[in-house]
Amino acid sequence: SSELTQDPAVSVALGQTVRITCQGDSLRSYYASWYQQKPGQAPVLVIYGKNNRPSGIPDRFSGSSSGNTASLTITGAQAEDEADYYCNSRDSSGNHGPVFGTGTKVTVL
Amino acid sequence: QVQLQQWGAGLLKPSETLSLTCAVYGGSFSGYYWSWIRQPPGKGLEWIGEINHSGSTNYNPSLKSRVTISVDTSKNQFSLKLSSVTAADTAVYYCARGRVVVVAATIYYYYMDVWGKGTTVTVSS
Image 1 (cartoon, each protein chain N blue to C red):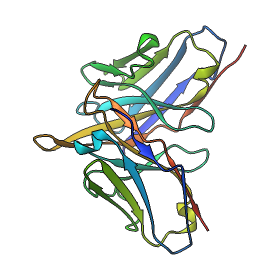
Image 2: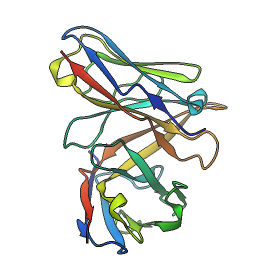
Image 3: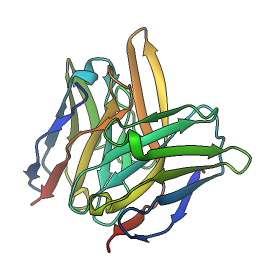
Image 4: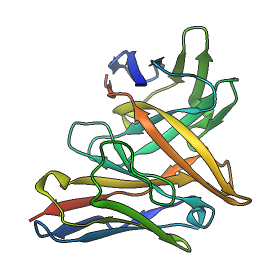
């Protein structure tokens, strides 16, 4: 299957920790990448590979993986972290193209 | 620093062909997958298709019959054509650079690290 499933929405108190999960069969072969998207803006890569952050991404963002589940953790969430988050990998069967998760809206309270 | 600049018609009538182009500035074209992704209003990201520097393509099966992606390596550009558009094709369209990294025999990772700013395409009669 090429589907990646995420919880639609989560909330976190300012300064607390939130974990976003992504489930799918392709994650047994591919580490997930994670993107942050704020309203009216293009997605921004925040985590890729086992747990790599592009330059400029704060170290409060981290990634992990186990079996068919990938997780993005924000430790000490800030107001500016309020956004939609999408996971991404490639289909490990079928046409082997990229696939995106359903997206999670993170609200910082 | 690599940048993607995209352009194309923003307003189409039903049955017309959507045409967008994405130019790559400041980086190599080879070694990457160049994708088109779209996002309907209020919805999530949908991958449309990709091309590599040699012109090999891969399309989302749900759109494959209407999609053509091409590349012009002399201009460092790649383009999207989507035929017979309907209102359901109304979306923000993004171009992006993707890369596959082999970690082990059957373990990989893939990411899209550079994105265009997006083009809003509206299909309306």
